[in-house]
Image 1: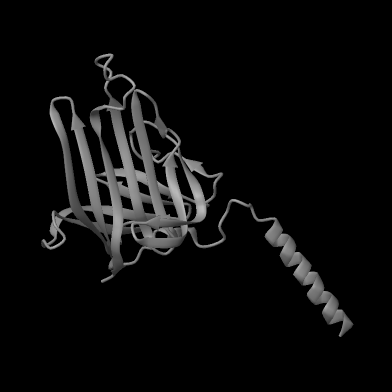
Image 2 (image 1 turned 90 degrees about the vertical axis):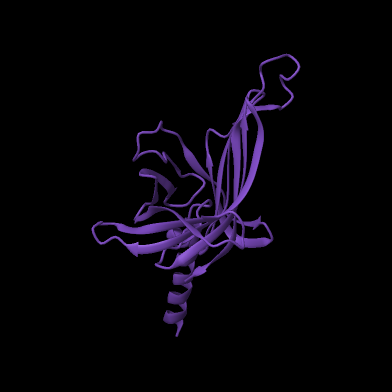
Length: 231
């Protein structure tokens, strides 16, 4: 009896030491589940977009986007699936086919190919210390993505998600001349729940507008998850 007690205590101490050795910024779960992929899973988003130009008034638009995981492509060695995309102008309109992209699950990353351009959307392990170049597999200039708010709760619209991660560009900045912002928020076992991207140039053409935040040209886009499930 004494030997069993000593062994149990020893195992408990060992388990505690193992937990203590885990990196503090790493969430212990299946990282791939920040974008759960299975045939028939879908996401519906409301997208709000603002477009600015020097020659016209700002254009504001709202539309709805649906993305559905289609069949797995057997010709690919990795887990690669079709991503079938639909659009509609109003929530009451019928969906119209838009495009077909792909999602690829690798042991260390998730790759999304958009209009034949491959982007590394997530890189594992999910941790504050993890950084990567999303353009590693395309010809666009190299940049750096990183994680923020790992495992934190996030309110997207009216929904609260207890375990989320934020993917941000290391080049996110705001100056008197321009604003560049890229943020993707993923919820565990749900997928992308919010996305914001903005590339804006502020007016520099006259002393009257410099430093006042008046937009000369560019765009701002926000994408909010409003429905998800499996068909």
